[in-house]
Length: 230
Image (cartoon, rainbow, N blue to C red):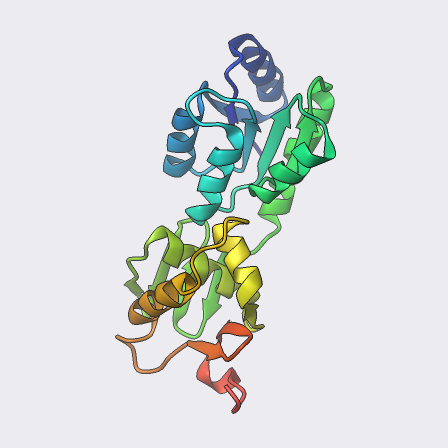
């Protein structure tokens, strides 16, 4: 089975070499030479893996990756860079990347990492169902009782996180980090976004699926699964 990948790399000679090798190994690649184009492609198409150079013109790799996570896109990201200090790696992971590869590297190692990330993604559930709510990660779409919900990127990211955690509680602090990264929002931002999300997910329907756990976080469950204390 082919892997569909996006390579965002401004070194055109390096990009050509990587694409030539990877496509011989069954990894079909799109290419962007700058961060803005890379972000556009990542938002428009569904990729199994994104290979992302850290130092890019127009939009650097850290900012690109952080933008994807803020949009609620969970595609695996392999950060590729010549910067190899611990602080550099921490910054890469905090931006939302899943793996970190330091230049120079062997082509075989790149292939193995891409394959591992794609396999990890394919083994994850791509559709979550809670009562009459369906959250489709592949189509980036949520429906309730067959009705498509129109969600903002932040609302989608919050619903996606709760769906992945369900029937467990989504802890407030972890939820904020997952959606906003380390750049935490204003104190009432989560409350405001959750209110808007509930207006779309719960208000038009006979019963609520989202409940607040005071002082802890939020939970997405069918009413029959709700403890009485919630």
